[in-house]
View 1: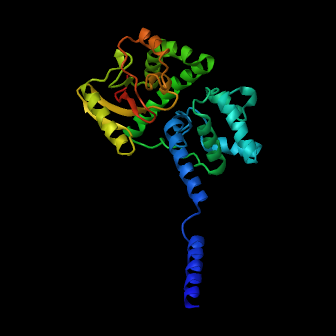
View 2: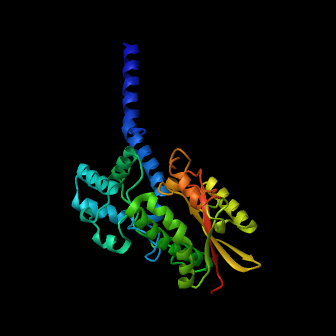
Length: 301
């Protein structure tokens, strides 16, 4: 009888521990999946949909607004996910819920992710409240100014690149990058009254090759990113004047032309890149890696 009481006590204790202890396996798994999806979206999506960007630098509506519109139109999860996945696979204006955003930013190109990842993204957006836009970047100081100038230039290049991708995929985007990217960057320099350049340690165009000082700044950014730290603006006084720097990182869209050969970067497509850029070094990247940086001359033109 005593042994039976002990056994019953162990069973009851175990049941109570299960009820009051850590989450059930299914809850734990869902939390882990949401965390992994949030990290994927931070690397691949926030460069356009960041809740911290202001109106002058944002490339697309923030996730908060997207989720709000889809929940209003599709309150059931299955409908929400199906509608969002359909639009992301083939963005078309007649299927867009946010016509004001389409008018302001243009249609996004098709999203280049695996089907399971696309399902995970739409499930996450349905299930998890997204941060309200904070409009970061309106701060004072030269660092905030460098970030604003870099992101304003990125917005113009990004909008034109996405338009080229939407019109004809990477086959159409490649000539755009070759013929228009430097011209648009120079135009933004004139518009913003500050000389702005893009540089890299592995340049595609030799005109974008970093010099010795810029290589040292890139090494600083690489170390910060490797340690999982925020890579914000860096300021330096140089023999040419005051300079500000801001990092450029890769996402899934970039890897079509900058990923690993034979994987994200099609082996049949790469000769077309080499034809335009015989000295190309800019391949072999993964998502979320340092691709280069913006260099901003803080002395006005």
